[in-house]
Amino acid sequence: MQNLLVGLPDTTSVTVEWAMSELLRNPGVLAKATEELDRVVGRERHVTEGDVASLPYVEAVVKETMRLHPVTPMLAPRLSREDVVVAVPSSTGAADGGGGGGGARGYGIPAATLVFVNVWAIGRDPGVWGPDAGEFRPERFAKSGVDVLGHDLELLPFGSGRRMCPGIALGLRMVQLILASLLHGFAWRLPDGVAADELSMEEKHGLSTPRLVPLEAVAEPRPPAHLYAAGAGL
Ligand code: HEM
Image (cartoon, rainbow, N blue to C red; front, side, top):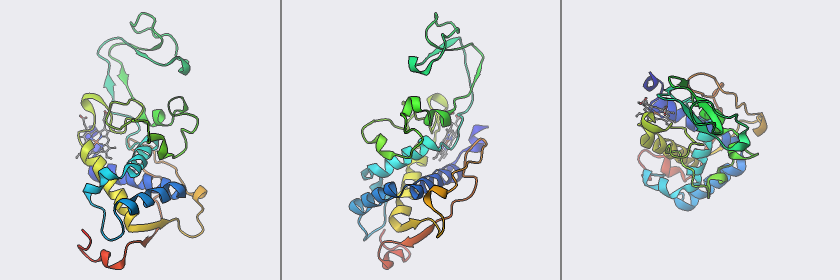
């Protein structure tokens, strides 16, 4: 059933809308991403897919968005095939596991248990991300090497293992390219009278987590007017 919930339009647009929301609430981050685009792409042409690999700060913005706002807060359910103890660092205060791991510290999970992995909670856990876990700070990825490819278990917006998202390459590339194009093509601000700290960040809870209320923002052209003609600058 999970593949009914995911796919291109919803997953990518939900992620881009959260990214834009965070950027509008964090003008310093928005300015830094825009500066990177001006430096790498300039203002005389549009962003192309080939530019994405040269935009590490935009990539970090996407990762930070996926950390705080994973499209599917719970991964597809798993069923444990055997007794297992999931080891955890002692700082989390987990009890001794009783699931067949010889008393190792961790969580004992008996065979045939339905397991839900809450990536939303993992992404906001100060025990994993530090005391600023609730802040939108793409810089945290500058030197960390943590990626969204399913190997780093603290960041699993596309899941992990055999059932991880088969659309990851397309989905990731689309989010990066759409976001870069929006930031490069327009100067963004909140509507008059809406302060950054007043912007609603409430989520609609369900199998996916879009914004509760649609984002409203004002866009003004940045590059020269002739680039907005159909097909120009590509
Ligand atoms: C930003 C974009 C996307 C995100 C964040 C996303 C996220 C996810 C997640 C979290 C899962 C569950 C993985 C697990 O439980 O380990 C999933 C599964 C899946 N995704 Fe995506 N997805 C995205 C884009 C796409 C695209 C573009 C496609 C298809 C073209 C796609 C097709 C699927 C399918 C078919 C599954 C079910 C796989 C299975 O159950 O074996 N997704 N996705």
